Image 1 (tube, rainbow, N blue to C red):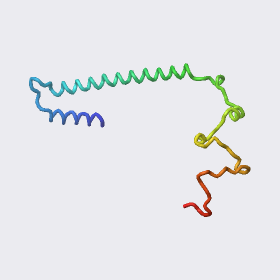
Image 2: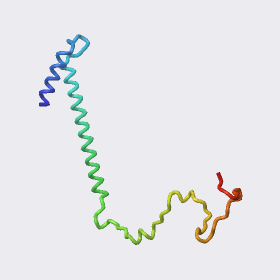
Image 3: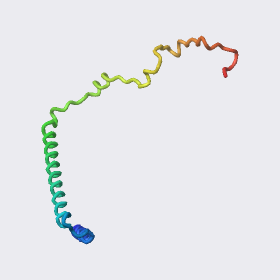
Image 4: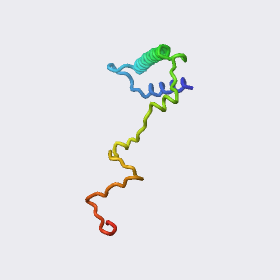
Length: 118
């Protein structure tokens, strides 16, 4: 199927290609050169992929941990060594008071006027 399409494409382009002059190469020469460039690039890519696969395999073999070398974290150690604070805690004022015991003082600039503030 693919061979037929390639052959048809080659024939159509060959027929539509203007005849070769003294300065221009023939269609067959251009086609052959393009196929050779494609084959060269494909071989180069295959070599690169092979080398990359070998490097990845070597990395896995050298740096993979065996089951006896794995370290496990105990839940108790994890719970005792971690501390969580909300990201917005930094924005809160440092002055702390017990809302059930201490009532904050009213701001000096706000005086009760005997009604609601608008």
